[in-house]
Length: 198
Image (cartoon, rainbow, N blue to C red; front, side, top):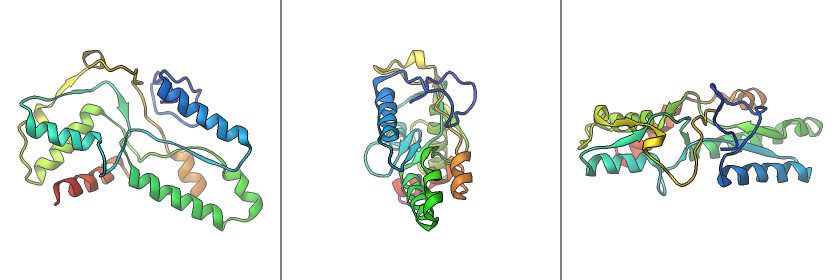
């Protein structure tokens, strides 16, 4: 949310920031404070983070699709669902990679990186994928994936403004650290397996 979401495509690290909320501004302020400190650093920008523990969008959609007769989900905000476990694994790999490098070359790795899997979706697409995946595993829902209604942001007002576009590209991270990140669906599949116990 350090970007305003007006870019038509995915964001790269060098794109101009323009947060539209206090949430986004505090993230950007944190980045700047780290840079100004002069220390070696890795700043990972990510989007739509979820995990097995705690509340998250996927778990909420599964619960609501079982409880309700209808489900409306925003379809004009784009992003990349990102697993907290992917963030943890990539962070560890990057630190290990830095440790293996000779001292002078370590400084060149300091910076801002997009840490997201590949691909993109909308909140509606995310919800439809989660419920559809559950249906394929034999889970029953009062609202099947094909009946989830797509709505606009204007039809679902929230107190804090959310950017229409939170898509990021992880190419710089992959190149600098020799990584190959998966599609976003890979970790969502794992999450659904854990949630449904299948």
